[in-house]
Length: 236
Image (cartoon, rainbow, N blue to C red; front, side, top):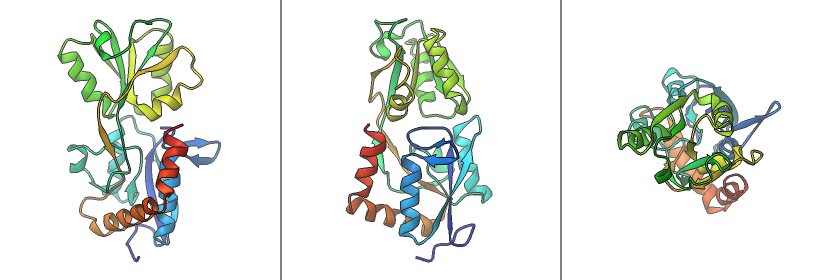
């Protein structure tokens, strides 16, 4: 389609790792929903796919790669928000999801929703869309404190929850279902706390690439390929 990329013939994709099932490394192999989606989009555009990993403490830093010219787009389970739309131009949403609450069912068996967290500490990741939700709950007196973890410290956050050091963790439901599948003490007790649209982002003003990604994504949706990826990675 003749779209311009930072490397000729290559679609360079920034992703914050790890964030399964959207993107993660299995040994030296990149896996996940965003990985397979962007490989398919790149193929539709006649381009090779290249992963540009981001491991900063604040998730929103992943968008800096667009302005710095280190990546063509960002695909990282990113919710489309007004704040982020000042940093990047978003393509059409590929899924809708929402924040979930994970608790330690042994330490706090009575907690079934955010309404049961009074007096407790809620863990979130820096730059995640759960962060403003958690601070709003604190401002309303519905939780005692917000504990913010570096984005790549999701495992540490869940370890603290398993050890009873915090009362709950909030993050998108698909990620939480994946992350706690081998942690029997932890359980998703509430979903759809928010309603969020997720999508691929490109550099501000890059309407040619945005249109190309939208077109390729629409083709994948029409053929049922997008639905198959959602079922494979996000509905397991």
